[in-house]
Length: 462
Image 1: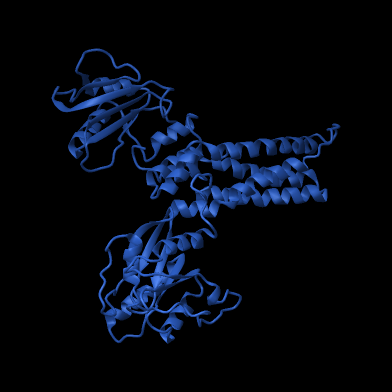
Image 2 (image 1 turned 90 degrees about the horizontal axis):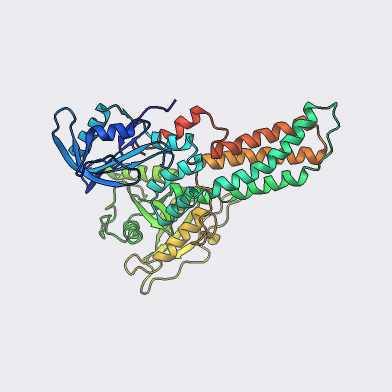
């Protein structure tokens, strides 16, 4: 299926110091020989960097100075013959070099096709392929550490170990079902089933935290006009991004900026002060504030510590009660009072009282409490304390989490069936579904349609 030669630009578009064209496939060396002329005559040798020029084979015109590397398969990323030509990083040199490679017999690669070939040729498994994309897209050092750990293969090893034990259980059940006339020696597979379930549950337990590190979260700053939301945004960003004045209603639209809060990429949404207004523009700003709150994962309810908690604060608190919320007691400097205990916010159903919700005293002016607020945001989003810096073994891909959830559900059913002494064929059905779900993670039971979806998210040249 993938037996032709492909080429693509492997560096980002625009100007840069270096631009690189990657060629992979059986004719990669022939393509390079057609368009690259070494400064010193002689054939390209594997894993040797050669200096020379990219040349138009039809006119012998020099296109650019370049460095060329040839990697003979299977000792390459794709396990095929690979050539990488590095030239100057302007759009014209790299695009012209790519055009020459295509003219010499290569085909333009599809998005993610180099990585797909590496997977299909056994160079990497599916978790490592996806981790490569996560490394490219990582927004924080914590997200990068998670991606690098997965790229190293820890998740695949854990999943394969769990599958190996469960496959032995399925083999026994299959023998019992398919050969009832034979005397198959009885086995107690209960411990193995439970061991597989414990492994899958352990991987699933940290998935929500891992996904937060990978995908980030949205946090809306809400409150009355002039309580200091924009100043708080600037303090969390460590930059003057939002316009701040003493005039109420300065912010009339939502403003979104991404901050690194305790290793989590958090989109902070500064909103217009929520209040009744006859001004049409302010009304639109308030409506967008409502929308931002509705779409947020967490709300920061900002209160002005220099003023009593009033009806406007109570009304906004009522809006935020359906969201995980942190109360920010802002402008808490000088003679500002401490937060009232408890805050006079109404309970709703079985939700905790507002006095039990995190209250962080801050001063956007002095910076007091800003680090504490960042840590509180991280704890709220992660559902507890952030993992330690060295703990980078968290499932961080929603696809993996969904597959693990299906595996856990069917393994629990299998264990229950075994304990209840139900027929082996019923138990084998649940076990088969669980094994297929685990195999989807590493790519051992994945279909072409799912591969197309996964690799379509990659850029061309990766």
